[in-house]
Image (cartoon, rainbow, N blue to C red; front, side, top):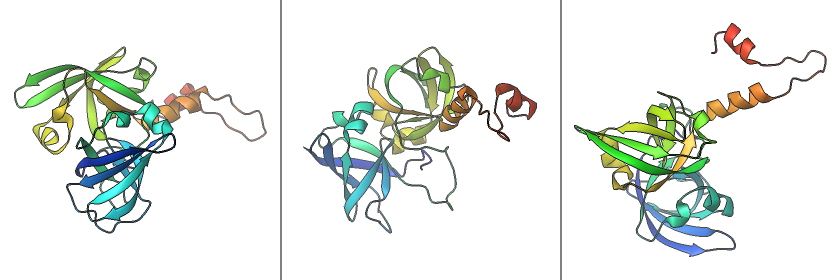
Length: 217
């Protein structure tokens, strides 16, 4: 689990094909203290398993599933990525709960300067936009951001100068593709509401009426 608060950027030193996937060698621009072989590191928001950790360098395999759902296959040698190590239970939750499992690929549809801030618009598949709400949280290339506004197949975020400086978002242009992870809580609620209640004795069902009655919605 992650928070969407980027710890630093990384460089893709090399990539090679494996049976159905890719193997990346990456170098972080920060020290990987207390490294653990097999730990999870979010690379542009996608949870990958790090191995052969040597100082700031590590290897990570990208599975066929990850290649089909993310932009990782588009990365070239010397390309820059956002990096975040997995959340410790004692850490501050500065962003929101991020699983590192990408829901879809989005595309930059507009960039508008507002003084020192920048408003970015993104297109997403329409089947994902029901999980995006105004002032809710969303993850773009691993960065936790607040949704300014949303409409059918589109949403916008406002990015502060600090985020532009410490992440790769400042490199995006109109038409750039990004990894999108929607807020996981919305997906859980949708599944609970759509599930058929069990008829077994003593079972209980969760419905929209139940949630409203108990102050959840």
